[in-house]
Amino acid sequence: MGTATARQHSRATAWHNWAGNVTATPARVVTPASVGELQEAVRRAAEDGLKVKAVGTGHSFTAAAATDGVLIRPQALAGIREIDRTAGTVTVAAGTVLRDLNVALAREGLSLTNMGDIMEQTVSGATSTGTHGTGRDSASIAAQIRGLELVTADGRLLNCSEKGDDEERAVFAAARIGIGALGIVTAITLAVEPVFFLTAREEPMGFDRVTAEFEQHFAENEHFEFYWFPHTGNCNTKRNNRSQGPAAPPGAVSAWVEDELLSNGVFQAVNSLGRAVPAAIPSIARIASRALSARTYTDIPYKVFTSPRRVRFVEMEYALPRERVVEALRELKSMVDRSGLRISFPVEVRTAPADDIALSTASGRETAYIAVHMYRGTPYQAYFTAAERIFTAHGGRPHWGKVHTRDAEYFAGVYPRFGEFTALRDRLDPDRLFGNDYLRRVLGE
Image 1 (tube, rainbow, N blue to C red):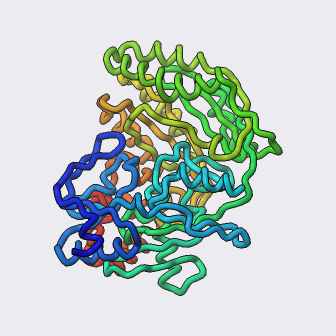
Image 2: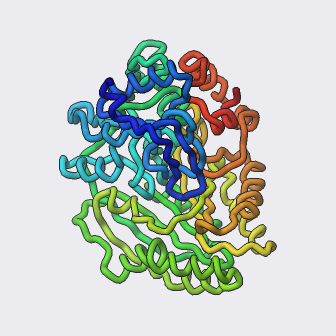
């Protein structure tokens, strides 16, 4: 019995994602301790006629990683492989959790340029689905990739970067956001820079003002985002800009407001009440949004960009051309105001510059995002369906890891390089070893 076989769990056990809205029962689970073991697991799956999917920490809300075949858990493939200070890069194993990477980089006096608002995901899971933060000039985590290594359907190990040969460049152009369709990522080389300070300025602002001044806030700040509280005219804005420091983290009271009232303990209780008594939600929203006050704090990037998120929810997020986002958000507000919907989660608005990744939600266009959420266990279909109708009317592209109903025909219309991606998939995985129902829907047969 080989090493990889010894690390398989033969009993079929159900897997579910973080939000609990996706479950799967794989035929077997493999936790490879080396790239060689992963290659062997892929070859064996092919021999046995089983599909193969890798799954990180399950923070996607779609079934992108679900399989009834072989489920690869890459958590043992973790840690920094190499730091190249001359090139300004770090090479990290695919199963490394972003939290661990950020802490390790800070210890080395280094930082990513931009990141999303949580760091519980694996590096490969976050990049493969297009996880992003907000930025005027700096883009998604995947756009910071300078090279990657992946195991293809025939079990070979492929290294690719923009400096490689024709095949390597083609793979690099697509696999940075590959949704698991092109192979299993084993290592990623990311651009890093010397650690720096960010000063965050949070300020409540009315909906009408923030939408009227959106372009101005975007132009004046490196990282601008805001949250609108449905059933109110209230928003909370956040502006992150580089500063000289020193570190001045949030005070105890403001940290409690952010971490508990808006994100965790108190927010959990508020949402539970709202689920039990939906009619109370508008009143709760008005009280919660008025509890906010302006605050300013300074820290190293990951401590400013990210926050703990213990309250579980389901999310849909669409990327729109930036010039369309204000109109779409106003339509969303009008829809909620007219409807009988009761929405207890804020709506989040962020931005990203255009990038050159084939299936990036910001591919080829200046982008803004609108994210809608519902508390886990609360029916979300009516809200998401109405929101999606608005977003698609503006040429929206859904986040690959968040709830949506779009299919390959739709994506072929909103991604100019969609055919480039699917042609590459045909070459790398003609038998669809890495396929599943989700990929069949979004990429076609």
